[in-house]
Length: 281
Ligand SMILES: [Zn+2]
Image 1 (cartoon, helix red, strand yellow):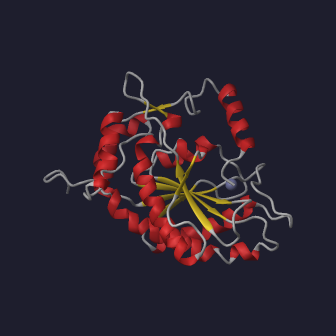
Image 2: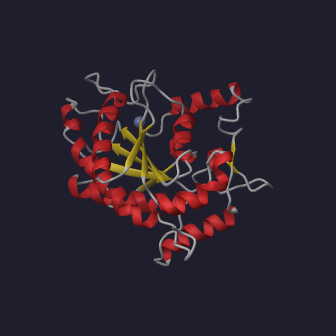
């Protein structure tokens, strides 16, 4: 499930308890080499005009990496997929009547998605490898530390027509900055929304071919995990946890994995920064 009230409450608790830590949402600021106006201008326009989309500005990169981010991202393009099996540890996510847990199914699903992505030539970074529950910010930080990455969080819903899959991108966020041009951590997704939608539409397009009854295009929602992620970022949610036997969900895994991998491969050309003659090797 995507919208988990318990998680929201826990996040608020962390904010209060961790006010001294720069790593926590609200307190942390991330650098942007572009002004938000520039970022807003370049990202959607590049797509509208059919030119190669300008890649993400270096929002969310650790401060020490900012000076080198632009050049390296231009050289590398999209190479990395940060894959997030949601929930885990003390948070089982959605639970079915038969005792199946979202946190376990998405971890197994992630193994298959990883394999499919690697076959497409991507390097995959998992936000968790076992039954643990990194915070939203820990998971976003893994993506925000990469160069040339997209982020995919995996969920099983408790609603929806069983056998369908939906892709969500974050709903609009105001790209606010302070006087130093810093973007707050919890708005890090704002400059990437256009690219996230494009990535999400491509993955959803692959999914609807395999899972009839799924939407044709990505949906928007307020997804906490995506909000603090400074990269093109999507949530993929499979319906649903109410199936009697988890084998019904497991049978969907290869198709979901393949759709994500093909969607990422189709998105890859959109992520390349327009070449500046003489600047690239
Ligand atoms: Zn979930």
